[in-house]
Length: 186
Length: 186
Image 1 (cartoon, rainbow over the protein chains, first blue to last red):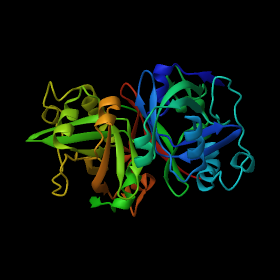
Image 2: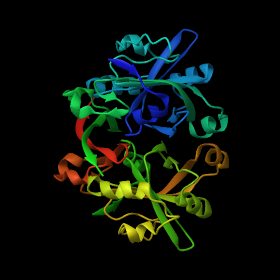
Image 3: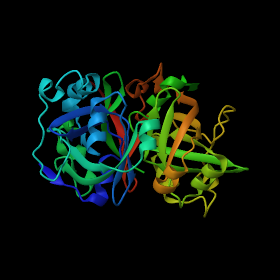
């Protein structure tokens, strides 16, 4: 079940380096794309950094709206993540073509993809130079949620879910991923 | 055994989101710290983005030298990664205190930590505003290497190593990590 995540702990949704789905909506148009290059940037207020190539349709929606959302997909969605990375919203209605359902979350401005295990929504910080030179967007997070089967009390606990299809995906290359694995204490 | 990684494929060393050790050397002083917030930023030439807090000793060495190195640690080093994240080089000689051995790699300027499974070395790109506002450093990678037991031909293959202690670490919080897990094709 989806539960809000306290904003000062929202960085933990990305701390272990999952591949994500970045989405944006503007004037009735919505798109979502797969992104391996995303990371936390600050704790409180939470900020994240995301790389979104200039050629993408999602980029145009991000720049038009000044916002983006992040959904953290899981093993059950590996095929979808590859599809959303290999096709452009310029050429096709990806949400319709790949049967992407969006959550009805009134506090989010960007699209949150159903079936994912965590979600963040935020507003882009000023930084035209980062975007122009490096395709880099810095985003202040204004809402965060997670599926409490795998994240609660500020911690991931995949091993307690009893369902490996809920583990996060970490992209290697070419549609090959590694699932997040076993706990290690150091 | 350590082997060079072709620079256009160096991004793959970070693509799956491991926690890393960031190091820097300047005028005979060397330090290494644990960093969960690192990601690839570009393919060719390869660039990465790393967050390094203002309070750290490593930060002062990065700013003085204009360079940093990244070592990708593994499960066998979980205790070391926690120690290098919880102590400051301002207070102690971390390399000596925690028995950190550095590789003898003539092509690297920054310290490469022995026992890790991949390494990158690079030069900071101009961007005082990113550093001042966001503790964010953008780095062009000038050298990359990996342990061929787990990375070769441009691909991670942890499952073939037969040694789970060589898997990368992905920090959750407070010295708790998840090891990278099983392959998933999507």
